Amino acid sequence: MEKEEKTTYKYERLMLLALVIFSLLLFCFKLGYMSLWDNDESTYSQISREIITTGDWVTMHFRGNNWFCHPPLYFWLSAVTGKIFGFNEWAMRIWPALFGIAGVILTFFWGKTLFNARVGFWSGLILATSLQYAGQSRMAVIDTIFCFFLSLSLFAFYRGYQTGKHYYYYLFFASMGLAALAKGPFGIVFPFLIIIPFLMVTRELKALKHLPWISGIVIAAGIGFSWYFIEYMRHGRYFFDTVFVYFTWKRFFMSVQEQTGPPWFYIPVLLAGFLPWSSFLPFSIYHLSQDFKKNGKYRPMLFLFVWIVVTFVFFTLAGTKLVNYILPLFPACALAVALWWEEKKNSAQIFVSYGFLILLSILLIISIIMYGELKFSAAYRDISNSMLPVGGLIFIVSAFSMVMNFRNGNNIVRKLLNSPAPLVLVMGLSFIFMFNNIAPKIEGFKPIRPLSEKLAHILTKEDNLGIYQTPGGFSLIFYTDHPVSTLWTEKELEDFMNSPGKNLCVMKEEYYNQFAGRIKAPFYLLIRQKEIVVVSNEPYSSNKE
Image (cartoon, rainbow, N blue to C red; front, side):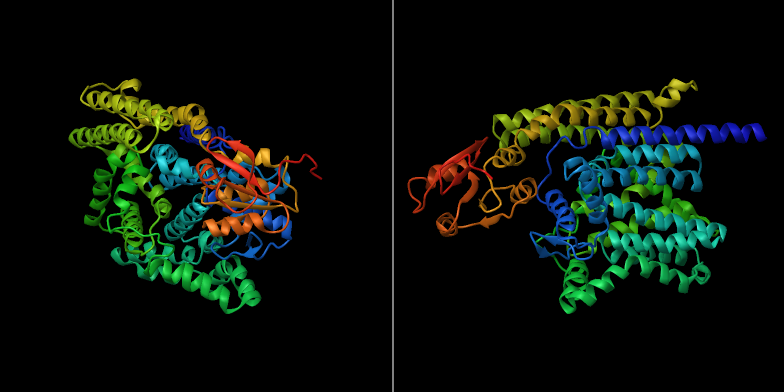
């Protein structure tokens, strides 16, 4: 018996090591290669830098102004890595990548605790290779950090509920506090939206009495709301109205910053974001729903079902809709799909699921071709066409796996072919292919970083820098580390170029050709980068101090 336990423990450690290595490769390979995306990545990175330049670790600043959109956890972390390694793409993206890896590891422990180590292993791989989770783990954004702490809070509660051990409940409250410090007060509300319906269905609401409410609230508030309290004392009613009224209350009950969508908004988002595993979700969720027919306190399938349904419905009802909002759904979806693979008995369900994936891959291929043909120039179409092998590979592997599902046999190769392994391998190779082959082509159409490197040779602290009706303004601020005036009208452009001092303006080359002979201001071309130019009211001078 002791030997079997040691063997099991050894295999579990190997599974965990494999997950860590795989996730590190997937989330950290060429992490700093691509320039930051406008506008979230570049905005968040600049906010992190301004913590260091202002010396203010409490109030976040952007372009020198107070910024209250999100709480500071990510910005604190990125400010530290920026201070140590420099404010570059890798330093700004490493924390989301590390929390993405932590989320994969946590999902492994979710599956191992609720079911068995195999479910945990496959659920971790499924989460890591889902399109949206992998993508957001490689971006300088907050979502994987928020997703991790939400998942950790639910895990801690469930373990406390299972074992009765209070230290799990303390972790539950601490995780909620950290979620609130990562993305807002919703971090404390969200876990209860799942826990209370689950306890109601299982008729176990009395379990809430076992939570250490007083000490737990002190922990959650001390971690999560101490920053809010300090900021309120600093900035008063304006801070409260901005954070709690506008960015919390109004974000749910109405559309904020024109970020809205139809009631079915998250259906295609989930189908695309959870690719290729979204094709297995319908039967996986149906499999979870069968737990309604059972009785008993500890019903993990029911817990996952409530997690998925409540999260999806909540964000569907919210007035403000963004693609990244439903990332907290992904760990539960990964667990559901892994459990379905573990317990699947119905070959027809597998056949239909693979058929759905084949259909999705065909639609992906057609969309790539049509979008490239209709939307972009020949140069852009080269990028879209480069993605065709990814859709084709998913199609081939899906068709092959669908056929192999009807072949009998118990050898290890057959078992692997009838598991998530082929798709995990395909997605892993596809991501590496995209990072290595497609990313450089995309980077060729992002001119702000190389343009900023050229600007560094001629731009001084005393110069005025503007950008006229051209994408990339937030990236320009970060890469030049210089104040940037945003100009929208021809009159604003003319006034800017005629203002005292040396004035440089970034714009599309077509605008330069349009205004060069017409605008009533000095207009000298200094830099040309792809379709973007830099003009100045003074000719080029190499006398940079």
